[in-house]
Length: 341
Ligand SMILES: Cc1cc2nc3c(=O)[nH]c(=O)nc-3n(C[C@H](O)[C@H](O)[C@H](O)COP(=O)(O)OP(=O)(O)OC[C@H]3O[C@@H](n4cnc5c(N)ncnc54)[C@H](O)[C@@H]3O)c2cc1C
Image (cartoon, rainbow, N blue to C red; front, side):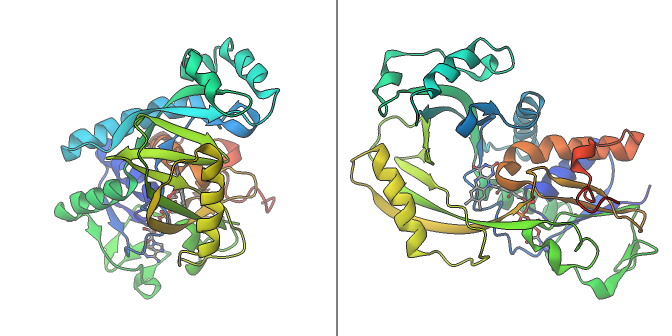
């Protein structure tokens, strides 16, 4: 089989690259380094959607597969990227602790839930609950993976040049590929082939603060999160804006995040960094994965939304299985589901 060409080296493209590598399929990765999402992410892998005390889509298989993925990439690259954490949900309404206790006896939820301890009640007016999770040092993960693939001659650090691509032959810069997969994140609209797939942009900002909080194992979540990243540094995020793709940090976002953070603690903290990214989202919160409507061999892998660090590794594995066995992907990820084609 000719190699696969992956365009876009965020968490989506990197997950695809490892899934291909693991199955012995040759590939090339093209990335222009203008990453404004995967490197900025807090990298929290949280199987819960706290607002309604539900699990996120496919949380049970995806969480375990994501954990395996980060462990296996860490072994390949002889380093480590992920750290186990407890995720504390501070309840925001009187009925939430009741729902929480009901979930505790549900076998789908219970593997993630940690036993109650007396200190859980000390948070907010309604108490709190804790689950298992982990976080990935996202910027380091992207940087080291790019270096890894570059050292093997598999990464081209360039923008994809449409002039060098023959879509009928699947030929790019004189090399013929068996498949070409576009994993461009929110910049999907910059290339012509999947413009009709409604990848939306949700801009987000995140702060890094220095906080003398001795509990550096627990990420605290109430409207925002405060994720410990070591040495009394915490990521505080994130905002969600649908009307801008600006990559310039704003005073407005900083104020919004700090106002929510101050509900969690009256401690004085020092803001030491502020970053911006744009998430590739979809109207129904499901990704877009599938073949072009007319051009065989051309694929999209996008729309990972707010949970790319959880969903990209298992979805990439499924996509490679699909290539090898033709086992169809779930219908809900069909890129054309909104067009009815
Ligand atoms: C503030 C913030 C916090 C977040 N926190 C979390 C979190 O805690 N946990 C979590 O799971 N998710 C989080 N996310 C979401 C997560 O970051 C996304 O789901 C994920 O990064 C999307 O990855 P992607 O690879 O699809 O897109 P991207 O990361 O945008 O990658 C696309 C890549 O394609 C490249 N590219 C684009 N066009 C071209 C071209 N023409 N030629 C060559 N290369 C090209 C870009 O340079 C980029 O490297 C967060 C996002 C933000 C903004």
